[in-house]
Length: 90
Figure: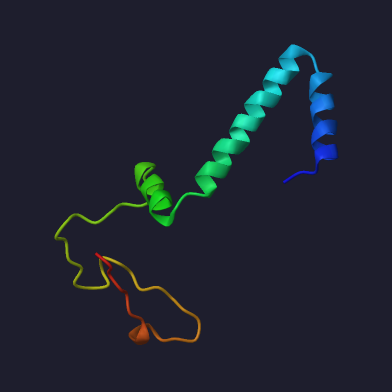
């Protein structure tokens, strides 16, 4: 939380601005609040947002993966591919 003197100083600077610039400040504060809200979402919220914009394609219900041809192996330094396990949490 900002100190009271810092807050008062900021308010005085905003009050000294012309109306059109105050509108820009309001828009910017709204942007910051929205961005903070998105960043503070739960893991499920972030996953849902990724699905909605097409970054993640969810599996179809009942779909099964039987080989690495559907999901290529992930390279992990120091581990041969035979030791890799892909866990499916459906």
